[in-house]
Length: 313
Image (spheres, rainbow, N blue to C red):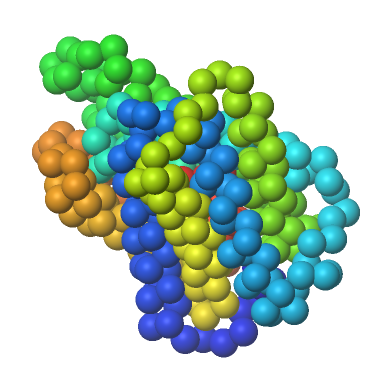
């Protein structure tokens, strides 16, 4: 929620980024743990609503609460909320249908989709390096999802639907990235984070008539914990960009696979397949090509990256 870098402290930046990624992965695990009993709309509410107090307290401590929440384009926040909340809901549904490492790996395709959408809607040029990155990334996605869609692995309708939901959520987050690139021209980062949490909380209430449940104490604790983790993680990941450029921090997004494999195995007894890991590796390679090219061109995506968390919009 800071508009510029305040100092160059790479170790501090990396520590904050890795801690945030770990928290976001833990958030996903909490949502997955309750997915069999709690509908996605209700999970979105807890994830969003209980992040608000954390964000507000932090903004107040920084003195950003008054001017940071002013907005010049309120409808921009509405559209960001609609698409971002949809992405979050689809991700939460997919978490109940697929292993945690697989959901994490498919989500790595967001920068690839963002690159394609930027060319379509922002007129950004895609030359040889970026075209290669898109091709490698999309090949990786196809490798990851092929077993689910071809019948060579688990061909259950649930798993197939899960793949489609996560792909749709990943594509939606690409739209969010594009939208945020426009919003940061006029909107304070604090406002973008705050109003998304508010909008997502309100939109999720629309699903109340469709089967919300009264959670037991354990489930309630997991849901509230997910919201608090999300709020703290958003603060950490945004703060990390105060101490290092986005191009340096971007590769640390992929630490989430390590966290996902560890948590998936210890909590859910899940292990990634070799095919999934091979596909994820190709997607990561494509993303690193994008990061390298943008670094060479001097394009800084720090604001947009810091405002789109892995499990939100």
